[in-house]
Amino acid sequence: MLGAHLNPQQYLARCAEEFGRLDLSQTAGLADEIYSAYQDGRFVFICGNGGSGSNSSHFCEDLGKSTLRREDFTNDSVKRLKVLSLTDNTPYILAWGNDEGFDRIFVEQLKNFASPDDVLIAISGSGNSPNVLNAVEWGNRHNLRTWGITGYGGGKLKSLGKNNLHVPLDDMGLVESIHLVLFHWILNDVYGRINKVGRHAG
Image (tube, rainbow, N blue to C red):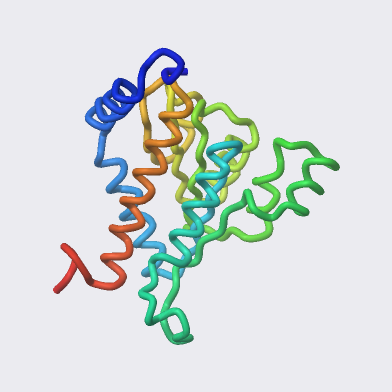
């Protein structure tokens, strides 16, 4: 844990250093994918465990609500992004986890909800979470557009997903923090495209 050895200034400087090492075309590519799903009316599914599960829920909430303008909240005719975090249906997760195993809690939900060309965003800092890998393997077999969001060396997920957004850093806290910052930029970019504001105006 880097924060155990670095003071706050050093920790944030290391975080800034890691941002400079990223392949930002991956971040832009995920924004493109989500906007394309919005345009086509396709679903975006997100999953992860622990801190990545929290990021999954956070990203889902942001994409579902904060891609709308406030004046459109009560307008039933406004098109919305179809997005669902597979981490948030607790009874469903507990039923599959208890009866069939924790490694199936995401894939079994996809079997109910997903269709070809839907997007699956699978977040795993290590890249080796079995339940995340199972979901991506199923998604690949059923023609979903799969994205692995990874840290460390990327694990199995880095090569398993059809696309990858990778933070090459061996510290889970910083990996998850950087993922969330990138997700917030993606939200802003998708909002700008949907609502034709900022650099997307005109």
